[in-house]
Length: 219
Image (cartoon, rainbow, N blue to C red; front, side, top):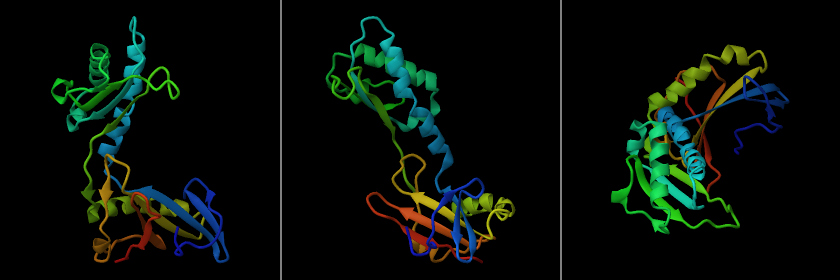
């Protein structure tokens, strides 16, 4: 990943997440993600809807296998999972003869796109139902980074029972969809943080690259 990290095998562990046996002793590495938690949690719930709706659709008499692609609108966050599942099932049942993308004006509440197609039998003869959540990406704030550090810093005393030195690695993946934030390296050059870890590192990874590691500055 980076020359910042010492050579050695990463051994999975519980508190901290990894141990590395080095010439200078045992290094502990705790890993956390930088994101907006509410949108990320919401997307996880919405991800269950396509399979639930497919199962309900297949229990209907005389159902025809179809592939269904969909995208949730921002409005979906205000609707119940059961309502979205029921309306999707009902919509597909009523439009199952369509082979294409349904007009946006006809879509049920909470949906931005619904496509209904003949299934590709070699992939799934019963039909694939899959969807994505519409999302926005915001610039990460210093407060968001401080929050991740503070949460882990409170557990540091326990980590030191297993490692003489402990580093915190904050991962900022900028390709995960809902809840995504983007850290500006120029901001990192100005920010200072309070922490008791020997090092706090931020790993920024964009689509298609190997990423870059930045060492955060202590107050």
